[in-house]
Length: 422
Figure 1: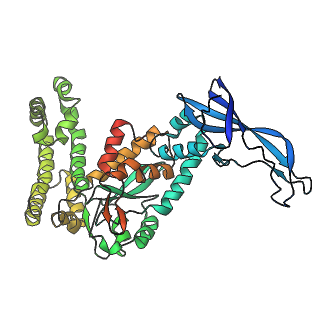
Figure 2: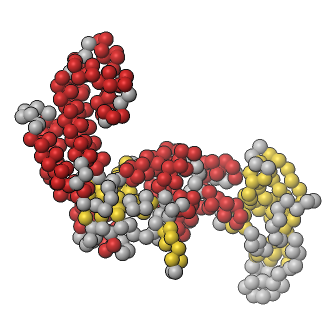
């Protein structure tokens, strides 16, 4: 029979099909009687026992190897022995080449898809993945970011913390929680922590006290998008109050788009949207005022330097009407509470934002959804150790070898869009 296996020490003698794939019957080729590994006396044959192992798919079908291995017994000490086959992973009940193939793919596609293609149990794929993750944890280390992004994501039943390298747009780390109990040990053990110059985050209270003690040269800059988001949220509160004042005819015209009309920047509106916005302005002048204050606040970040931005904010705050627009007054208080960190945006070497980190959070959620509820450990590994994303823009060659910065976020985006990041 043609040797379809190309595995040392066995030869195929039969092949049959069943509903779950192919079964290849094989026998060992070494008939030599071994000596007892315990007492060294010659052993004798003691029958044969078939063992079934999973192998790499053939003809797009899962493969099972049914290997008939002789058993040997020592009359002197009673020791039983079965010939060792080096190509087998006895722990996984699979060939080593199948385990290697699963290792290569388990962080790039769903466990269920791999299980269906190979015929192994989902839990077996999961266990192989956990072994790989443990190995990666011990061998892979990314270069500490000079400009670090910190953000949180609600994932697998809890808020997690995502750390990114904003200078290179790479993923650096994912922490199990966003609390100081998790953040402080991370920053304390961070290698080359004195090299961190900037940290960009939102206004979540534990972030700054967590790193302030351990990153001696780092300055905090509050993420621009979290600041202007508060202005949009303040406008949303006003919109909800006044939208019902539209007539039925006008409401039908703008009902589906009124929220987006008021949240978009004017330069991003189409002609039809501008006409619809004009109706809103005429019918709800109070909402038009709130819209103007939202836009005036956004204009702060259009200023080229820090002093101009601070002047625009001061003018904006002074023009807020007393007793009205409560959410906008709250926004002004929040800005004062984080004044230095918000206006540090104009002190940075380039305009630092957490935009890529926010995009990464969306991809992590996609991975979680496609995997039907992966654990935190699996999602973290799929994010941190994506092989393709680590190849692109993730490292440089030095005299000491390769220095890695982590998976490239834009590449992760492309993988998700193409369905590769499942």
